[in-house]
Image 1 (cartoon, helix red, strand yellow):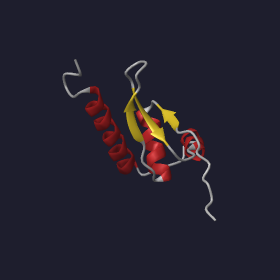
Image 2: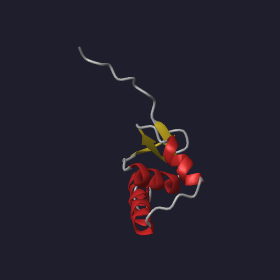
Image 3: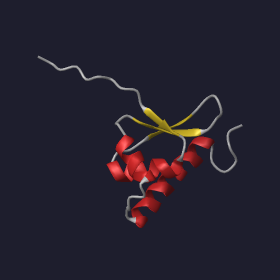
Length: 89
């Protein structure tokens, strides 16, 4: 007998800072996408990220070099999705 997984909605964050922390804290990757309504790059997480968000606001320590690396990776994704140096026309 197969168990059906409850399909929960993805959590969407539009903050690269918070998304980098969540990725690092929970060791999960986000899916970046360009939101059509305001052309802002957002990050979707399929897992429950509420423990990571709580840890972020409780000022839990994470390795700074790893955090900066994760943040640079997300900023690179933003740059790529926005169309590079000159933007999409």
